[in-house]
Image 1: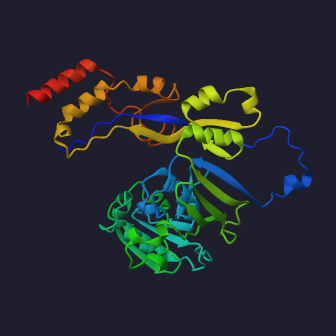
Image 2: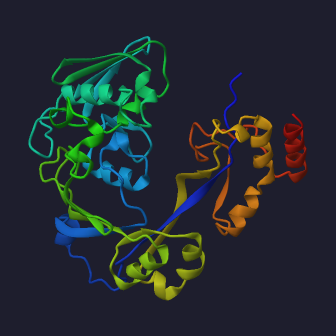
Image 3: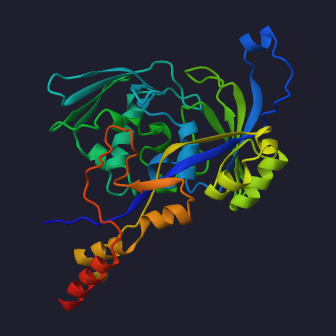
Length: 359
């Protein structure tokens, strides 16, 4: 029997600040209220710098955040967490649930002006499942039995057996076949100079400092109202917080200390909007099963039993989190509360380690 690693996780409550909210703004005129303006820029603070802007190679949140503004998938989730079309205008699912036929949007162009077609979708599928591609996102696509570009705007996938996340798996960013086909994707210049179909186009990347995106005036859903998106890289959270207070940032995530102790004053809240909500973020302890120490499941169980998760939540997160029983946050359909877990039990940890050592 194959036994996976026993892990512990806790969900963080995501907190952020949005700055430049002046409570003494002049009264809004009817023209202002009815006609949103184009222009200006939003400046975001990030602790991390992207590693690559090729989405299927990205494994860090900074890379994914930027790539999400540059690329599109066939589908996406709307504000009510319902799937809707993005690059796919619509789709049909066969009666047996094994075949999905996507009808792609016409008139969509890549940032270099080249037309988007089913060729791009087929290439993205093929390069993702290619064993030579170092990606963490291949497993869902490996469930596909056959992928076909029936014509420039029709793409069909067929599965061997029912696969629950089949439709949602096509939220994966679609890549430009005309720039990548026949090349080594790991050495592509798109990792530093991406070309997508999304609402923002890549402009510049100053290593260790910032990335700048500019709005795509030809975006298929309409030109974005904000003209520039500036992603500032500030590795220290305290420095980032000072930049926000000084007006150098519009938006940043807050640490528990910042949220609980540094921002809860009338003076501060008169200048900034502060939000708190459950995020799809979790921290976990994983075990390298190739290492001889962790091949015995009793060792893994002992370590999980020896860790006081509630103490970490209270001491490190100042109570702004909760013990998780999997990677899904409470309130979502895949979240389960009845999963067996190892609570804090030092005596059990000692017993398990003694048993493992005795063998």
